[in-house]
Length: 269
Length: 283
Image 1: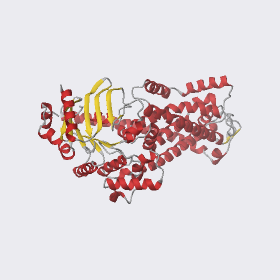
Image 2: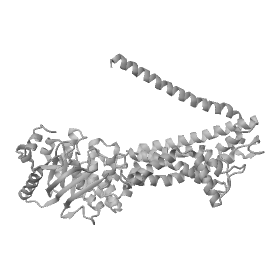
Image 3: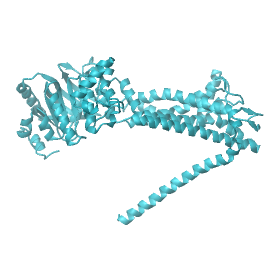
Image 4: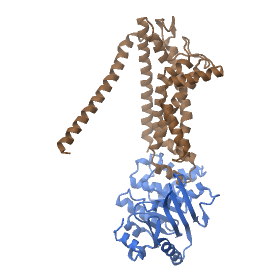
């Protein structure tokens, strides 16, 4: 029942935005260890917009996010049906090159995880593994991305000291800079501010909003206020199914589905 | 349960734990004290700088330089070999195989069994292979046997270390478009301080093993100069000296024990220094 509503909502959304779809999820079903986690997902995510995936704990939000850059490939036992198209290209096609697909999507995890190396090397790591060896170009990339995330002035004098010495908020911005350094098209955030204090959260949110012009951003969040602040669209997931997908204000203020109403009002969590 | 009962339980548990610490610490002190008391009078520059004279079983003169050199050669070579083989095995099982992989589960079981296998079994197997290949007891035979003996220690310790790496770190590196080999490099960087501990454990086992080398390395009063010739090791020297009926030779066994303890102490201090230096640079 919910599936058809979800599909309908998604189709309406695509027409309303008049923006080209950047990510298209078609008839996606996913089983992990024989457990049906994602059920008939049909979503079209418009380019250069912020989409928040909301829903109760264990509804499949993070799983859906990880299917977008094939991070579940190495998971226990995975069975996947349907397709995920990024800029029209099926990322689950047999000839799809997985490292290239992942490079196109920067991931911001729940807690910041700097690599065990210096601040400079953290940002330069992505370009280096993708073949960039020119020191001057690497320095330029590091400078550009650290400026981009508003961290340059705070770290310019200690670029070669350990990234672990940064505060947790600075670490999260560093991780964002590291992700952006590989020049992705899409930013995926998995509850990326859940470990941060309110000021760092606000900094990250403002950053994401400012990056919207150049990137498509998909966020998983359980904080409705955050979804309201940053996102253009909200996708409500319940028990692995898309219940409703629409503009932020429509979902939060005028939800069409009873389950969405209950979730937004805090009756289910 | 009442609060008084809970506090009484807490108190009893604390005293049991204190007693255990006391028993173990005093046993260790007793061992070190015995070695020191019985070995120190026989420890001399001659012991460290000379090879034995008059036979290892009855000789009261000379030293155990040949056994010190043999032990260091054998333990260093086998630790390096076990690390070089063990690290890729642990990395492969952790990074390249799925959690449900049959190979992974079987390998884990196999290394658990090998970890607990007595070293005399390794010695016996290696000895049979050496006879079949026509190789006589030699330093090489000992190195191969002790490498096999220490390999499960290295693999198991590194596997445990890899399990402590947050899965997010692996996922984040993967999400940057890294290949599995590049992910493995990051993991090794992360567990680097622990790698020293794994190496230390392997070295400790290698330098102190008697049963494994008894059949495969042989024994000689000469300095180990060639890899295909028998070599003396400190644990075997201690074994032979202790079985001697001459009290002076028995005393020299304790002095050799003291030397072996000192070697391990130096290696532990060096490893800890290296590990703490790495930790400072680690995240």
